[in-house]
Length: 118
Image (cartoon, rainbow, N blue to C red):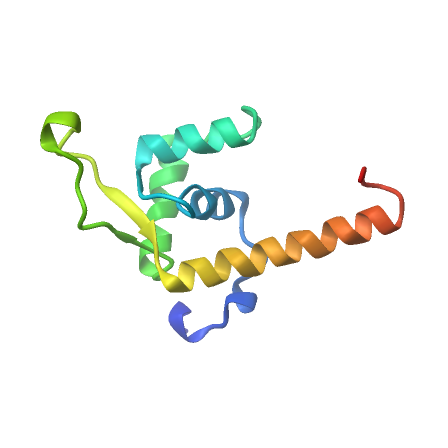
């Protein structure tokens, strides 16, 4: 079944790799190495995504229409022309939003049972 026919909620839960890549692209277009750096920084080094995981996941996200390759390029003098830049699609934003909402509900439940810190 083609992914674009599914609702964002049907794709949940996301794998950690998918979640972190979508999150890295939520505020800016990035190339692969920049995505890996963002994931490592935002997880305080707890998640270090290798090239195999990163590019395999990017390939699946492109096929699922959650991300797309960007047409925008930095000044060639400031960037390596071999880099590919990626950005979220509107569908990818909906999927990420649905997953963040799911996480938010889980944290609320954890707080209610005294597991999570306010």
